[in-house]
Image (cartoon, rainbow, N blue to C red; front, side):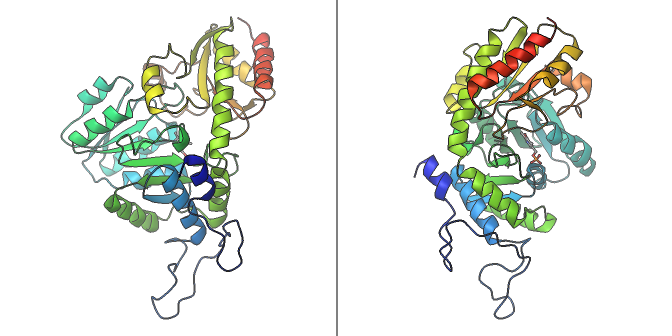
Length: 383
Ligand SMILES: *Cc1c(COP(=O)(O)O)cnc(C)c1O
């Protein structure tokens, strides 16, 4: 079955007792047993819940994977995947990964004896050079946030495998509609389903997906043991989101291209980071491993006055100033003071994240209106 059909149907069937078309919200913590330890597949909702099962099956199908574990947040999923490692293991991650991922790696897991190196993986040589005999995990984000760099997933996951390391792709930005990391060689895909998968900025949720049965068993064991599970209502919201993922992504991509082209031609804009441009350094890899180029982009102004950049984010009327991304509504933000403020400034600057960078999550509104909005906002900042 193709993506759009899976999005609407995978993991879900009319409810056998009532015929309800939508998967019920099984708002229960526990389940009746007929004899001790004899039950209908569920005993306690931390270990499993039917609404969650429907979501897990749906997300597994969309990623082309066999197994999925859903978590109460993207960070919950990331935390669980890191717990596959043990003290002394070395991890290589991209140098402009999600700020919260950088924070849990350095502020939480370093305390437990894991060590991390952060490299610009858009040049694969940097990954090759950083691999060590004790490297047990390679953490890939592509497109990266907020610089929209592209990592060659096929090559990066092959290098990891040759080194005996697991490869993990955070597929939040691309979504399985645009990019299928398991097919490109990744061992595990993680998601912040809070973003495009949920799609309506109304739920915090995460997921980890794999084809490897023994990894899946370990991840489910950690899910149950650590307990960062999503509630049934959150699972229902995410399932409602996946039904239109393909439709939303098409419009996100279409609008982002319009906005990127508008910004590139604007006299006050210095540079636009958008993988759909042929001038993007890794455009050909993006074109090869992605169906389209996504709804995210970032740009800098010609003026290097940080206050111009900050002001611009308050001048837009349709783009709302807010963190997060991937919802139907367009958002604008200033990474160095918001989403990426937890990265030390020297680390940020070294990775190419300038103080004046502005990030857009382009929504599914009318594209022309989005351009008018940016145009009037840019008119008001000094050049
Ligand atoms: C938001 C985000 C996360 C964290 O997910 P939460 O659902 O906020 O916990 C991880 N990775 C990426 C790329 C994100 O954008």
